[in-house]
Image 1 (cartoon, helix red, strand yellow):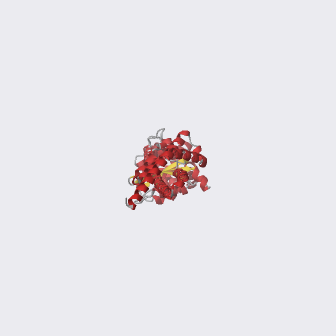
Image 2 (spheres, rainbow, N blue to C red):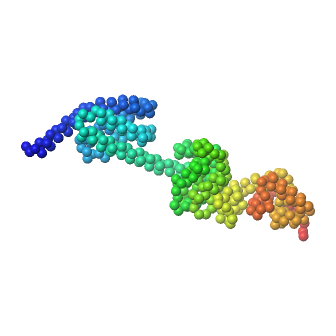
Amino acid sequence: MPESASGGVAAGSDKAATLAWLRRISGDLATATTRRLEESLPWFTEMPPGRRSAVGLVAQAGISSFIQWFDDPTTTPSIAADIFAAAPRELLRSVSLQQTLQLVRITVEVVEERVASKGEHLREAILLYSREVAFTAADVYARAAESRGLWDARLEALVVDSILTGETDEELPSRIAALGWHGHGESCVIVGTTPPAFDVDHVRRTARKLGVDVLIGVQGSRLVLVLGRSQVIARRADRPELPFDEIARGLEPCFGEGHVVLGPTVPAIVDASRSARAALAGFAVARAWRGAPRPVEADDLLPERALAGDPVAKRTLVERIYQPLADHSTDLVTTLWAYLDNGRSLEATARELFVHPNTVRYRLKKVGDVIGWDATGPREALILQTALILGSMGSEATRRRSAIRRPR
């Protein structure tokens, strides 16, 4: 027999003997590995028995797969993947990638120690195979993270859509919690346009810097942000909470061209649909205000929203402006009507009401004290006049005012 042939037969015989020996000790290797895990990893001993058993199965599958690979190295991809196929799906969620790599390291250490006497070639094979297993573990976790990311994105879109449509139910809080929502207390909604190159991560980073958590909804050309104050972020930043209008100004560069509308603040995320309705209604009519700032509050667009038929805006104008003035004094309503009808002229208003201009000035100041709106500004005048018109419909106020007027 040629020398090369006899060498090949000897090498094959040695490999066959090594394989037979590995198969005989595989059970002992699995037991030793489990014992080493218990001694070295505190988190392993704290796991429920069922989870520890599943980890043991993975370690045993790894040892068995190494033996198969040592017999035929071309089976690396399929065998390495089979190791993690032996683990239940729940184990992937309870054991992190770092912990998995710790398992691989300890398993390799145990096997190395046991086979050290069998030669350098076997030790090199173990190291090569452990590298393949580590890469496979990283791939498994990366795929899981990608799947979770896609699921989170779909769930987030569903939650934002529920808030926008107002079709909330008892499952909304649990869905929000599943997204890792850290918001507590007050919330609001911002609506604007989606920029051409939208960066979701940039929006989340900006929101964290401003002390809020955010849910993001992209609906074609419309971008919706649902904001909630985050106690976790606030504690880390160790700074006072910012008002939502200032937060909106900080997030304004994240939107595309056009108007950005901030909905009113609501007590909690489950009430965010009220803020969303106002923000959407304001966004639909914002172009009607030629000098609208960016961002603009939805309540500053109450006249335009009312003219567009928004019932919430109509009710808000009546409840915040007309009704408080009417309840306080009919003189305030009458004076405000006359002042607005006369082009915000104190003298013309005084002549119509047969009072001194200082009386008109005093009553207008009282109007501001009662409702918080200044009738002397052009924008405020539009808001107040719209509220008076809506409040006077079907009331006696118009007839009382007509009786006071005198023909010129």
